[in-house]
Figure 1: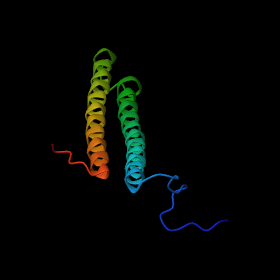
Figure 2: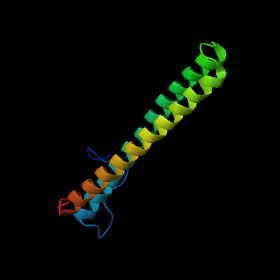
Figure 3: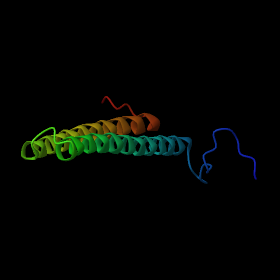
Amino acid sequence: MPWHPPGYRGRMSYPGESSVDARVRAVEDDCRRRLSRLFVMFATVEAVVLVVLVAAVFVLELVDPEIGVWFIVAAAVVGASILSVLLMKHMRDRTTAVAQARGENPLF
């Protein structure tokens, strides 16, 4: 097994790549990892919420199914809204981080 320096993540910088390009690529890789984690965590939480609601409505019959369906729909709509807000925040943070990696001032 070849030796790799600390922090090596499977590739070195490309020929002709500047340090700015390497920083931008590192920021984009980090953003990709964060987005992947966000999707996995959100899907896990949303699945648990929906399974609990379905079980409460249809299995345990705690609520009349005609009304319980609206609880399930409401949970899905709230989840979609939260996901939209989280994705917009992620996109804004990614744009800011890439601009900072390039040395641009994102405030102007």
